[in-house]
Image (cartoon, rainbow, N blue to C red; front, side, top):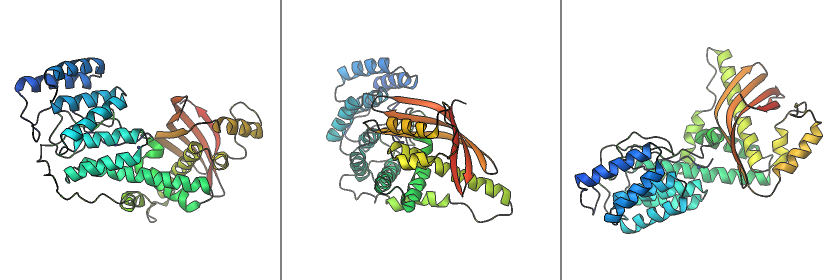
Length: 365
């Protein structure tokens, strides 16, 4: 989803037999394990060369082809990876993993409808595939986020949509981790194809538990999580009832309020809502170059409104509060058609009229 953080079934060692496939010979298993080690070490070009050699002698081997799809995904060759996983879904429609990995690639490309369809197919073939259920919940949350964004484009003063968008971002870590995105990782479900390594996020690899039987064709799919259900964890994140430690609670409330303010700031910037974006800055904001506030506003408006879409997200938020002032530090990710950067960002904020606003910002620690 910042970019997108979904779990990917990542093969590092083909150690299980699959439906309609003969069990791999020890030599084949060893060859795939060796290729998996190259992937783990980040030697993707060599891994691709080796898996191509392997497939030259076993062109129909599903485990080898699945591993090739993983390698292509990590090499950012999305179209080639899509072709591999799509072919696997056609030849082995009873296997959920290729559908799941297709969904992750589609989500990274922000083709959320395609991702949703692929995950629904994964669940239809294997109703107990927990990874696909979790990913489908994330997709629903992303679609909800898009809808709230659209509502705010039409009416930026819609406080209800703002609050819901903030909750979704809290739930997904979308504002704070952008998470375009977790790299390649695996879930906790049991799968016909498994990995020998422990799971990592969307750029690493992950292992599943002991293999479980694949669902038979025609089995009724488990009902996907509804968007409303996906939002429940966020509801639990609301400030707790007054406790015996009012000072600590007040500080915690301030951190949550600041996080929401930064979420809205990044969202406004991403959708080019200049009224909301500039409104995140205090009237006495210290402009970086010492220019007048009006000149800075004009320059920012000109720059942000350049043609093309932009996406701003952040992660690793750390907030320190001192009364009505605060400092927020995080890793900011910016992506446009012509530029993709990541940098450390520091915001100094002040609370006025119940609202946290930026009084100074700088790049760096």
